[in-house]
Image (cartoon, rainbow, N blue to C red; front, side, top):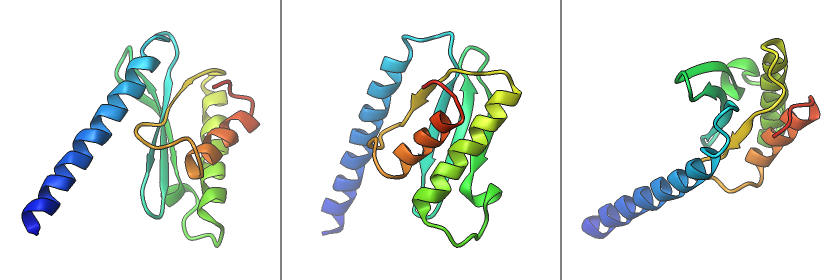
Length: 124
């Protein structure tokens, strides 16, 4: 049984990597814009603003460091992370970016983060 579980984990990683590359290849069409990359763990959500031309992270926000142990839902934390990142983007005078959801579906916390960005006036 351990062999089959190792194979299934390997297949899962391959499928996720293919999905991530497919999403990134579509984002590569807008080269002038920075991208907002999302990582979602079981408890927290992280977002980074990345300039691919330079290969540098311009700003970042996470539910772990910015909002700590507040007693709110994970979706509300994701929305606050989006708002916080949007405020940092406005300070950097960036009004538009592309949204890199990775291999995650555009629903739940990922959507809440994107809605938080839009709420502050960032065009995605």
